[in-house]
Image (tube, rainbow, N blue to C red; front, side, top):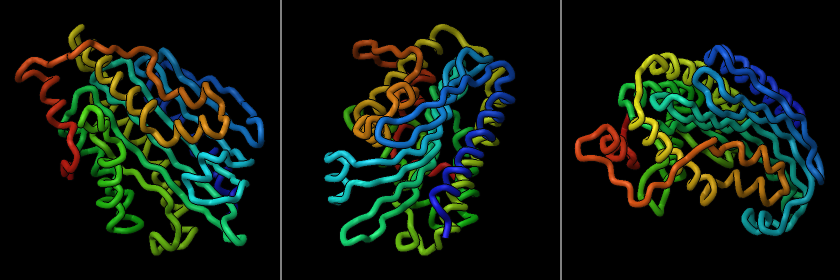
Length: 302
């Protein structure tokens, strides 16, 4: 049986691999690391990259925390016990270049003791892409790569987790998806998947290791494209939608704040600049309008 210590160690290795891969892809930016401890138990490694060749701001964070669950989280989970352990890697990258997409990834493991001593444990995570401009060929490449990873473990994973991402990364008050989705999953265990714990753990690691080759390719495809002030203004508009989702709906942000996590690590998902223009409407037939028309649930990219 895999242990929480083995899971945390593997996640730290994946954090190392992703940071090295992003530095190679950017060519200039370097990660700065901060080690931190959480009041109540555990801590983590926050790694931030800023002002690179293409990556304006990004974080690749590892944490392994434990302690007592706040009442709000216990109520959400439907349990009365206090003790928990959670570990994971969380990534958000905001590029400076408007043709390179924002990307988010999270792989995580959670365990606690439930009623009558019953152990509750599960894996969660996913990868999703938020292009400032939706490029269909890039969307197809991204989703095909995720499907390939999912298919190695179970053939229904991609379809289920793609729909989960469409539903989760949805800005209800705007009636639009945050981006082109990806995969999202939670509470994976043998009962919910039909796989054993070792296979679910291998799937979690495989998702983590899909990140570098996929995002490096997207950077390579788009980094030499030219852009102008119109493209930059639109980028800041799209970033504002990202902020709205993370602050209003994101479960990870809420969990971090409720469990007294490190605020700088929690809010590293926010971009360095975002704009809110009152009642902005893109020009008819523009690249911007085309992107808005593709921010819908249920688009089959593969």
